[in-house]
Image (cartoon, rainbow, N blue to C red; front, side, top):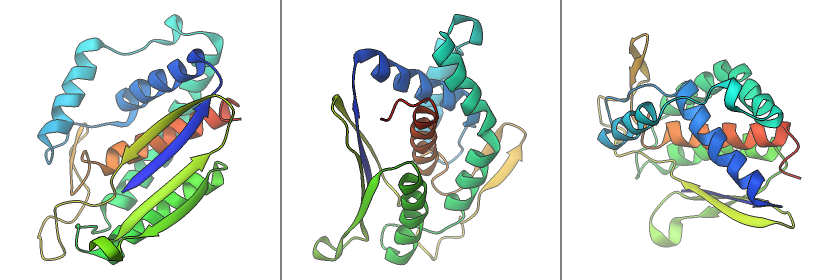
Amino acid sequence: GYAGKVEFENERQLGNLNLILLYMHNRISYPCQTSLMGSCILVFFILIGHSSYAQLTRLERRIAMHVDSQKEDALKLWQEVVNINSGTMNFEGVQRVGKIFQARLDALGFVTRWVDGKPFNRAGHLIAEHKGTGKTLLLIGHLDTVFELASPFQHFTFVNDSTVHGPGVGDLKGGDVIMRGALQALSNAGLLQ
């Protein structure tokens, strides 16, 4: 698993996170052939439409431009973690994916720790906290997939210019990448302080 906790000073900052998550989904997500839920979420975001720069405040435009500037990095991270087999019972693979996100969250000033899953027969949990004085927000995801080592379905692949498939591209490695990117955008805007 993967859980992060962030505290916000006011409702506006929390609204910024909602905007970033929506904006990032529109900017870096591709339809997912492996996850019906991922496809349904993408359809939902398409139906409600893009945020355009013209409708955003100056701070929101800055955040959106940062998200745009990080698209290639997010795509590389997405490919990297999808290409690591992290089937639920492949503890080493789940932990490798966890270490990648742990390093990225550490770089944003989060205090991270790995909770060993041996007592409950799982790889464990990555916990990341960013202390603050405002409201608390819990972001939660998971690092494993249902595709074990013996599965032939192992790699991130572009089907065409707008469709990819691979183990966990939508459920939930893609979502983990979006969460990390949203936190990076908030950090860049000085909103994680």
